[in-house]
Image (tube, rainbow, N blue to C red):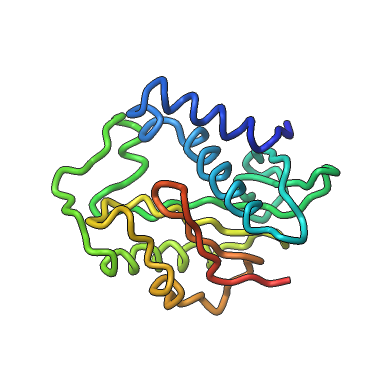
Length: 191
């Protein structure tokens, strides 16, 4: 079902207020809604001309046939498809999201805060992995940087642009969203 972006974000924020540990570890759907809502809000703020994203729909697995189905479809005010959005998380090497979802605990045991430049390979790994898959045309990739970094307020925009976009990339846009959902950078955009 198509919903206004602000409703998706409000639902996710409401869930995080009810139980932050459950939100962070148990429910992938709420987490993805939060990431999408934060990203789209920032995206729309940067749009001085062009399309504003107004609605989103959570896509079901295999909804688009044999190709990999992205997480969401996003639409303009006229309910016309703007893009599909695939959301992925860059995590510390010691953490596995599936294990955290099952145990309801964020695994920071043995995880040391890392310098901002040390997490670039973690983000690069997500880019490489996602670019190997076949997605429909008009798909955007949003990499959510959920890394236990030593510098929380510094989003190294200029350094992130040094990440290598794999040759097999078929995404129309690749963006990195910071852990607080307050900043993003586009690594590439295709028209």
